[in-house]
Image 1 (cartoon, rainbow, N blue to C red):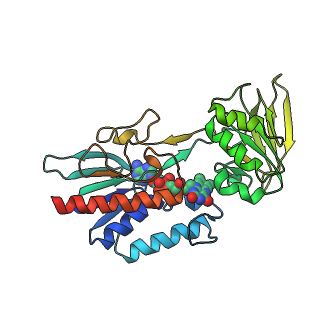
Image 2: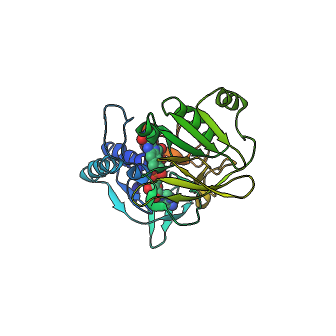
Image 3: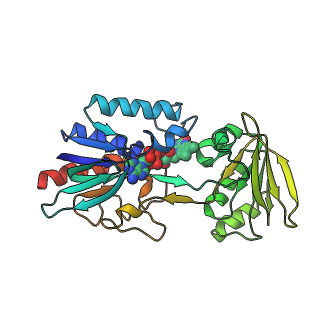
Length: 303
Ligand SMILES: Cc1cc2nc3c(=O)[nH]c(=O)nc-3n(C[C@H](O)[C@H](O)[C@H](O)COP(=O)(O)OP(=O)(O)OC[C@H]3O[C@@H](n4cnc5c(N)ncnc54)[C@H](O)[C@@H]3O)c2cc1C
């Protein structure tokens, strides 16, 4: 039996493992896809305090090395269920195995909803197609960019980008926004944001990097715009349904928890992007990881 099982090997999960090991707890990290999570897919991380610039991959590799050196165990297996047993321990099932622990930290992250295009162009993600303007917008300072989306994230992306990009083209499915009025008002006041309503971006064009997008206009005509970068903000997708028996999910599917990272089940904690929160970044994910592991360690002492 492990002291703590961490579900998810992203920034939050690996930080939780780091703190748990330093508290002397045995730890198993279960990672369903690839270690590092979202940040490992980012070409450059430039807003993590004290690190001027690092590739997302190197950041994740360093964290992985740190937790392995400290003795954390890691398995590449997706957790499919969590059960709390009568003796207060937890049983975590994966696709292949079952593991027992006294405490569990869910750090399963979130997935940006990807735009479905005519051709599968996932190869252009990070090479002109982005899902995080906060992270990757500054690379296009002084240039023209496009934003796809019509709700708060897209509005915020457009406003942020308009501060340092030459021009921002905003593609929206309808002729209205589905975000806060204050954001819409601020957007309307910007000279360098051009909204293209009733449009649908249907393809990304480019060999090694994005060079253009294709979209249909309000009359259904297929059009093309040469552009070096497009920021897609059409929503995020948490994947927490498998844990709904032990944790409350909010309307959007995020695990309900406050800054303490506690869930409704004693001994079960949540960290990072998968929980209810306003800012989803590496700095907030590692903060949650530290808090969740500390509170899990205190919980173990109380048993
Ligand atoms: C392209 C890109 C660039 C970004 N750039 C920046 C940036 O510059 N600065 C910044 O601060 N933030 C940036 N972000 C956001 C940042 O990466 C996230 O906020 C942060 O990494 C969240 O960490 P996390 O551990 O909570 O979740 P994630 O990174 O999503 O990690 C969750 C992990 O859990 C795994 N998992 C999910 N379900 C299961 C399961 N059932 N069983 C086992 N494993 C599971 C996933 O495979 C994943 O590896 C960027 C995001 C992207 C996508």
